[in-house]
Length: 172
Image 1: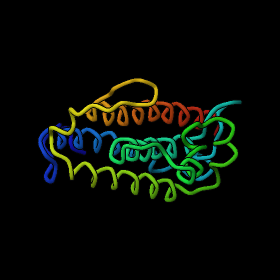
Image 2 (image 1 turned 135 degrees about the vertical axis):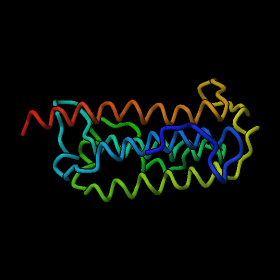
Image 3 (image 1 turned 180 degrees about the horizontal axis):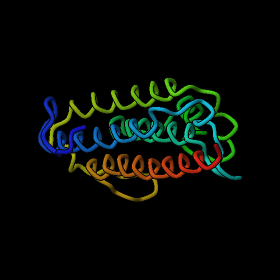
Image 4 (image 1 turned 90 degrees about the vertical axis):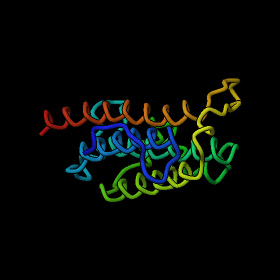
């Protein structure tokens, strides 16, 4: 694991530094989940909780949604929303729909969404990071903040995953 924030080949300026942080955050997450079984991924720690599998899908969904909003400058279409709804919202629908998948399934989704993010980021220059956006809720984040938020959300849910893993140990 690389413990430095530095320029990454193929990315312009601060985009490379952002990618460095995104990659580190993802490596830590992957290390945390590497030995989980399907039953571990489906475990619901208490009524109303989300499973690790649901949280992994949520992490991937946030990557996807930001690809659409930031790079395509639009909201999700009906088909995209239908595909990602339970992962985005979590809760009861996610508990019902996101289950019975292997770790390989979740890793595939995480890899696919992140690879597209990295590809899209590689096509931008550093100045693009500081361009602002106007969201429907009236906020105006710049692109840098938006991708920081993707990483922040992943780190937050990684903390939840670690807590669920501790609960799993107490269950066994």
